[in-house]
Image 1 (spheres, rainbow, N blue to C red):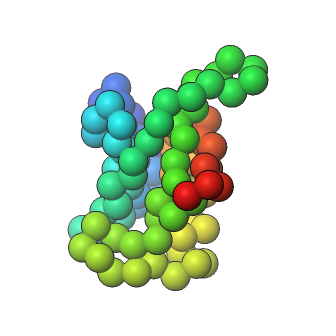
Image 2 (cartoon, one colour):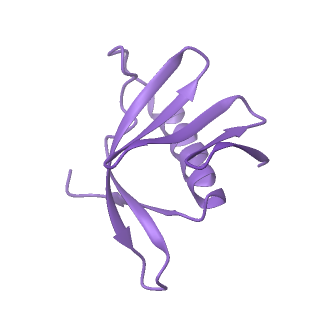
Length: 97
């Protein structure tokens, strides 16, 4: 995937989505007019790389409350993960949520 930097905390994909850190414990995924606010915790992987820890249901609905299909959730998760990795940050899903 090809990304361009929007600022120091956000990237835009050539595939039409944006991922941006919006606060100390939040990120945002945006596709056109729709967005998902993602609650995050900071962590470190065993290799020392920083990562965001997100809930397993982080992509279950848009901020307007509209549910997202499992197939679309998987696509959004992969987009989010790719965007974060482009920024040098890993992603871990907290399975306890």
